[in-house]
Image 1: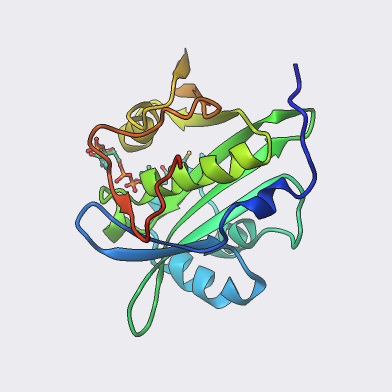
Image 2: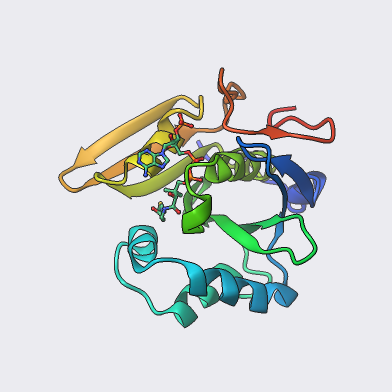
Length: 202
Ligand SMILES: CC(C)(COP(=O)(O)OP(=O)(O)OC[C@H]1O[C@@H](n2cnc3c(N)ncnc32)[C@H](O)[C@@H]1OP(=O)(O)O)[C@@H](O)C(=O)NCCC(=O)NCCS
């Protein structure tokens, strides 16, 4: 059954958030804004070809990657979040996005891209929890992702997040489905913690 979706529900979710990576590094998470273009281009310019290929399953030119992250303004059913460092000269270090399936609005595909020097520090786990909060508020109950079987880091993020999940193995790729409608996604050993009194599943 398709869940009922109310227009404007996403506005019920807090816009910008402060968080902490596993090593205590403070970060700021917000939706992509048109003025983030230069920051996104600098983020993409530092990312290795291997990481880009894992994200897009094919080599991609930096301009195309930046365009994809920035997205068309006001695109319906899409949410792209950026994670920035908090310092004198803040730097974008991760992106996470979901795109709702037009014919199945209770589901959305998620994907992540983390700067190489920030991988393994809990960035995408935090973004996954945040995307799930926004998605739930918009009536989305399932996240799906196509993951290369060799992409142990991405697989682990999904399977250790604490959501009920299904995995379909299709040779070199895995189709992962997370039931984000179940608010049980707190890890016993969280990859990071939100600060400011807000927890991912409040
Ligand atoms: C995959 C990716 C998004 C993971 O993001 P991340 O912020 O590094 O992941 P996290 O730090 O939140 O957690 C990763 C989990 O996998 C493990 N992990 C991280 N890097 C790993 C690696 N290279 N090999 C094996 N395990 C790894 C971590 O130990 C962690 O598990 P734990 O918290 O139980 O210890 C990131 O590595 C990336 O951007 N890769 C390139 C693009 C990509 O693959 N995108 C996915 C397309 S869907």
